[in-house]
Image 1 (tube, rainbow over the protein chains, first blue to last red):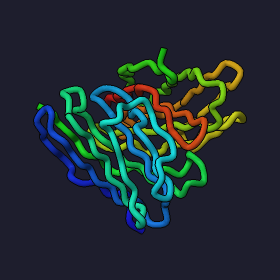
Image 2: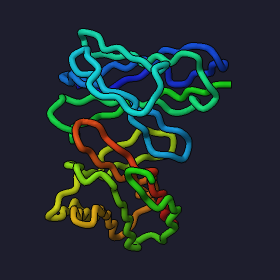
Image 3: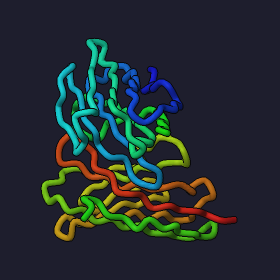
Length: 113
Length: 108
């Protein structure tokens, strides 16, 4: 059974650019959530996808968008990058049976300069 | 006010010590409660779920007080390998709400 994999592991972008982060969910999991973790803080919920539909969204602006594909993998897109977008972006997958079965990927560390 | 509040620490304790972390949450509709562990520059990993009746997993004991909206984690006989950040997590649906984490450093 493979776990959650994220790519790339590290990324440096310039302010104003766009970025796409990718996540492959754990086998058998149909729900993917994305979190942003700034340095020294806990992860903050961005949004969740269930069977290719957005299923909840946190307090993030529309320039944060996502997709989920038929194989349940997912993308997080961020447009018009700002310096404050620098963070660890975590993807978590679950079977959708409740919040107790989340598995996190090792994250993508994004630096905006 | 943050939805989930934790003392950021750090808690510096000697090996073998007992240490307790506390957490408060503001959403009375929260249904599920967890402690996660996060090592430096790694992803969070589930340590244990927390139930109203209290639950124990080896050296770790978690307690939930719904009336006070308060969660605790007790670590007995601390090991060097327990050094990490401990994240208090609550959920009112399928979304997880994390506290800022409490950093623990266990010294020889």
